[in-house]
Image 1 (spheres, rainbow, N blue to C red):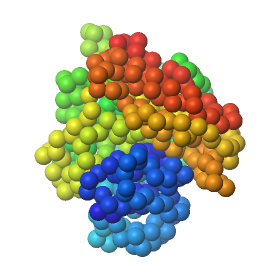
Image 2 (cartoon, helix red, strand yellow):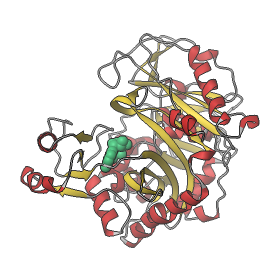
Image 3 (cartoon, rainbow, N blue to C red):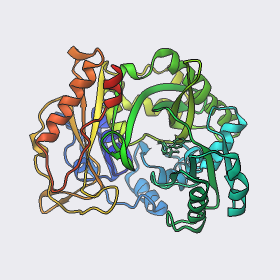
Image 4 (cartoon, rainbow, N blue to C red):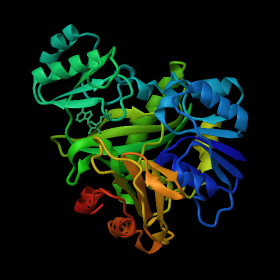
Length: 445
Ligand code: AMP
């Protein structure tokens, strides 16, 4: 089977890597891909992988690539083409495609839609107000105590959430979102939200329009600095582990969040097929229990969690995509390698602010451990060398070995492999966090 993957980051590299291991795949094309994807990205795999240049925000160009390549399956990685309705268009043209329709992707592409959907269907989430003007904001603000979370409605690449320590700051932030000075796009809706305290957890469910099944749980590290300090980024690392989510909590999240989303989206006429990423805040209650509340939904695989999840996936990834498209996720058994995995992001100096590009990367061929994979996020090929071409450059990802499947040594094993590999890789100004997984190590998960 020929498979086309849309996107060009670490998530897509991990998807292409998993596809290259599938017995059902004969050829993979990635648009646009990156320097890591265009190399032979799986040792001992003879599946050809090819990249074709494309702007993932150009719907007409994306359609042209699909029509030229005629893949038997298209997998849409990033949110932008989902928001443009690529899946709807491809389905109408008769192509098989993995990902939600434009209407179903609103769970991610519109925070006001997602909040009102959750409110309509009693899905636990923070109290909120959707505002359409500054006058609205001024009227609603007294209902909220500080800190107040101010969210832009639309896609903002991780920059659309501001936690404000005063009502005045919240009002100013909302004003900048409405005017477009904060994000470069003028927002029609701004969401005010109650601030929740707790630990964050990413829960991934595979959805087929009728059923939601658990894929994996992960924790990511959004802040640039160690100890979760400094500005938010697209993600500096993530880990998964058997101890992260117990069976009772997994059942709770499926029943009260993921399956309810799938049921209600179907009833509203917009069935959800694809990966539902539930960004949860696990809020401790006075009686010692934990109430999981939804912070956000994503309508796709997250980055860098995907890299950490897919290195543990034992089920053929094409079976996963097929089940989501065909409505048979309830019949699928998803097998993960027991233990833990970790993805550590190597980023450019200055990221998430301004950063240089075009710097040569050395040591990429120094990684020989079969449990470690270096996924490329922002790289390019230049004069025969691989150079930096983004804020997040590499996702060094490792899985624990079978002998250390018990927690927390499994996580420690994965961490020592990833950091060991990072020791041999360098580019000018390379920065990475040395404390990925610190919460799980502290809690002995
Ligand atoms: P979101 O894009 O909505 O997930 O927000 C990005 C990050 O902002 C989350 O991962 C949280 O760290 C933080 N955040 C969002 N909403 C809230 C909230 N209601 N309370 C506390 N932190 C939040």
